[in-house]
Length: 50
Image (tube, rainbow, N blue to C red; front, side, top):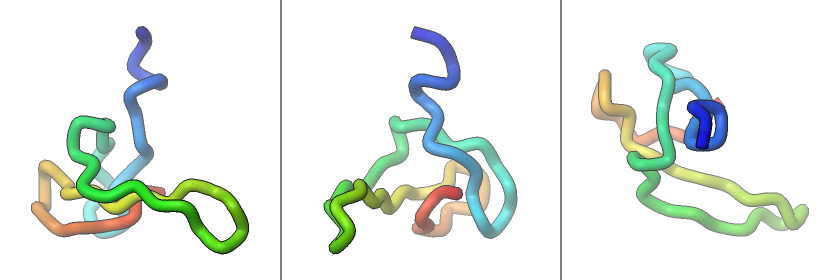
């Protein structure tokens, strides 16, 4: 597995790279896509990674 496979994106508050290890909630949006809420390991906010 490479780093990209475990990456969720970046924290919209501080810009830190976030990995799947920090996922708190996964859900399906009304449009059928997957949404995720995670805790940022750097700023400790709960965010939707970008």
